[in-house]
Amino acid sequence: MKPPVLLTGATGFLGMEVLVRLLERGDRDVLALVRAPDDSAAGARLEGVLRTLWRDPAPYRGRVRAVAGDVTQPNLGIANGGRAALAEEVGAVLHCAASIAFDLPLGEARAINVEGTREVIGFAREAKALGRLERFVHVSTAYVCGRYSGTFRERQLNARQDFRNTYERTKWEAEHVVRAASDLAPAIARPSIVMGESGTGWTPAFNVLYWPLRAFARGLFDEVPARPEARVDVVPVDYVADALVRLLESDAEGVFNLVAGRGAPTAADLIELACDRFDKPRPRLVPPGSMELDGGGVYLPYFDMDVVFDDARARSALGLAPPPLEDYFGTLIDYAESVRWGKRSVSREEAALSVTAKAA
Image 1: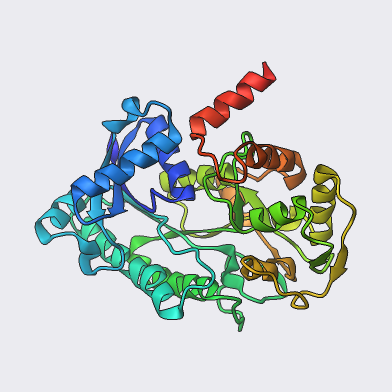
Image 2: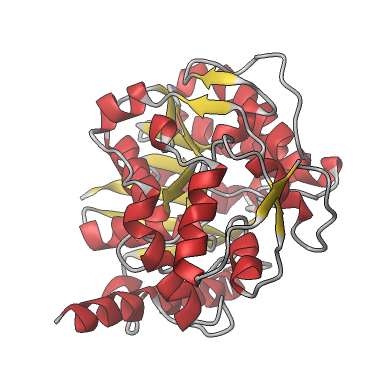
């Protein structure tokens, strides 16, 4: 068995998908840092995650342990004795935890995304000093590009860009912190907009593109604030999680854009897919910023992007590429409708069994 991996963000959507893969591979245990006042409460939260993933999580419980902590607290909120013992165990750190809220005040977003990353790096350095740490992987976002026009390459970070929201800004700041930790030889993963699984549509999080798609399905849009030629870079969560596990098991360093890249659809392509799926007439496109939309306005800037992400390094190093959105768009919507856009809870395993039963 390989030494355990410390996984932050295991209670989030992407973290769950990574956790599934690590536990099903069976070659290393997982120590899940869970925000909770004590290990008992952390264990209860982790049990909820396991039941979200499997109908019966019994085969996996013995291979994952919840560790109560908080990335926003000094020393990750772990008592000194417990922290040292944990650091002695850990052979890898995969930092998925972040606030993905677009409208969080800057100070709060920094506390989680920047200072939280700094605390995780501090723990990783302690683990390395104790002799077992071999790998550090940090999850960033492709949108550290901000309002950049043109091709944004994996080597780029400082491009005189400004930002749409505090999420983008603080993830950009966090990348600077990670790059400065050259002693850890970090790998930095930059996913774009992450949607449900390509094979089942499963997702517990109906945000970002799901919000405008649901509104469009309900006939709420006669007009859509988007530029037809704007790129909407979307990838399924299974592609991102597979890539993260490959990064964890490799020795590749540097930045990897986990994106659709030049295969990303335009806003016009996405609208066409939605019109065909929901049998709606083509809406009139209006300039972005010309409409006020309650509840979903924070997502509209992502229909007004002039950037194309380059992902040549990720494709070459990882041997992976995401499927085109048109190949799994129907699957995403089938699942969303089956669970009433998140109002009904379905485990990941149940979603997979449902697809298998329909195919039989």
